[in-house]
Image (cartoon, rainbow, N blue to C red; front, side, top):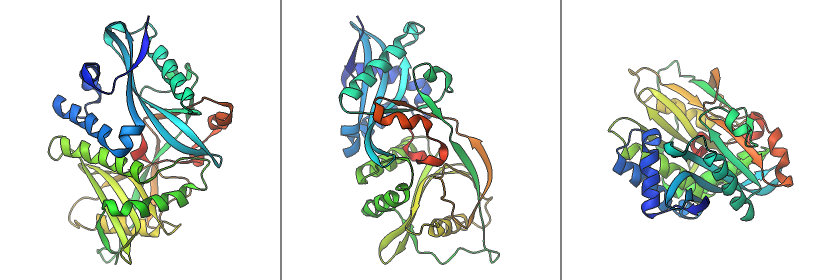
Length: 324
């Protein structure tokens, strides 16, 4: 009889990592793919909020998934969210209901531990998970253009590299920005550090030059007043997250102008972002939109979270860096 068991370490985890390597390695060698996962679990946030589980029948591995635990806010009330990621059925056991059984057992466990809402991002469209009771929330990636000075220079903005000492200010900016959203994660310093560390690890462990993570601060009075975290692949930038003490986002816009102006002779980067509703720096123009490739999907685990299925993009405060 199949049962759900923890798979945070040991031979079972190694088997899962070998099985999932081909589709989720992001260009890493297998040894570095292992190190990448172990390092995520080693952060203060990862040790308590990220776990792996497996559906096994005796000594046979049938399927596996990650289970994240998030604190969040829905319509002004705190809730606990179970994030389901990396759902994988072993090839020999596909088409026999292993993945649905795994998900149901995983969510029952999460519900027993106090989770009121399940969240996942589907890479295979909405249909499969809709049949398991999840509702898709349409989200949009925006293509951005940064307005440049006609004087061909950077604005007078104090820019420096981001540091861990900035996390308290970043968390405070995020809390203010998210307060008006119907749904958002509660992003404390440990959660933000984990998210940035994960992206840095992926860049650092991968092939040289394949990707980069840039983290910059606009400083006022020795304190972070705005920030941007940018994922770079070639000439493509993804704004992973950003924030500003100024509600207009003008400092973020100035930061982007300064970063674009660093290399005047280089082609301008193609910039995309998933921006919270109402946040668009005045120096930035939306020049295109496209549906997000990974479909956000929600499933209430208690009556108190039923309102989540009626959420829309404009109701969310959620960053690309927080997808899992």
